[in-house]
Structure formats: structure tokens, C-alpha cells
Amino acid sequence: INKIYNLTDQENFYPENSRELKTTLNINTSKKIILFGAQRISDPSKGSQYLESILSKLDPNKYFIISFGVNDKIDLYKYKFDYINFGATYDHNILRKIYCVSDLFLCTSIHESFGKTVLESLLCSTPVVAFDVGAVNEIITHQKNGYLAKPFNIDDFIFGIEYVLRK
Image (cartoon, rainbow, N blue to C red; front, side):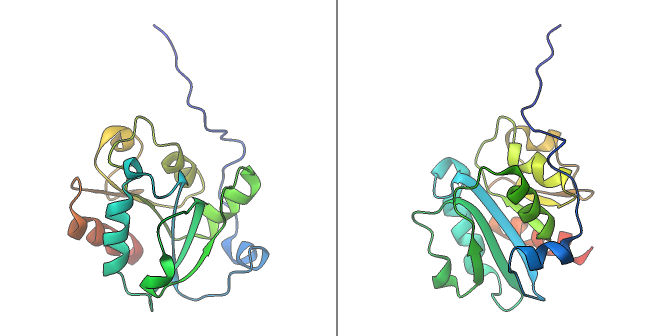
């Protein structure tokens, strides 16, 4: 038997008071905060095509968007959201704060062998909506700490966003 450790530093990801962190991160909104992020957001394996479809169906009057990672192709402005992109962020303290101020993390990946960002989000008590692909169903407990949408079904994914944010 071999033990394979996950690479998430559980000492650096934990819940914090989001009200204080909003001030620290210069976020002033009463809207629900939706987060997404990856090293390269537009990477097709991260489901960028699905992310754009999802964003196009969400109401920009209800949601504030935060993202992290290199965003070289997705134009959030065209969807009329108020948003902040923190860019390529490797500082665990900043990442923890970003997860903690968010009401929800979106994982639109088309395959995940582990889902490090999913685990980091959950460690910060931020629920996750993801397609039920790869290993995310080993991290997310459906309708408990997030929502597992039918693979690549945009309407079910949006239902998951609304479901989680109603709780």
C-alpha cells in the first residue's frame, strides 16, 4: 500500500471573517461574490467555453466576479459584471483571502485528476459548483458543500449556482 499525499497546504487554507477581508482586498459590494480561477483561465481543459456560456446567462446585477490566474481571452467586461482579476497569484495568504470573501467557487473543468482549487476553496468554507467529472466528486459532497452538475450541462450548472447561493 502506498500513500499519496495531496499537495494542498492545509495550514494555509482555512476560513476567515469575510467582512474584514473585503476591506483588505478593496471589495465593496453587497452582491453575491462568485469566484473562478486557474493558472490559465482560458485553458480549454479548464472549461473556458463552458465558463463563458455560464457567465452569459448570469445576471450582472446580482453577482460580483472575482478571478485569479492568467486571463488572456475571457473578456469579463462584455458580460457587464463588476469584477476583479487578481492575476497570477501564488501567495497563499492572498489566495486564502480571495476564497474566503467569495460566496461560491466555480470549477468548469472538463477533467480533473485531483482538483486542487476545489479543495482549497472547501478548506476556506467556500462551496463549489463543478461538473461531475474526474475526481471532484471525491471532494465535493453533492448538495452539502457544493453542487455536482451533470457533465457539461449549462442549465444544471446554473441551477447549482442558484441552489448553493440560496442556502
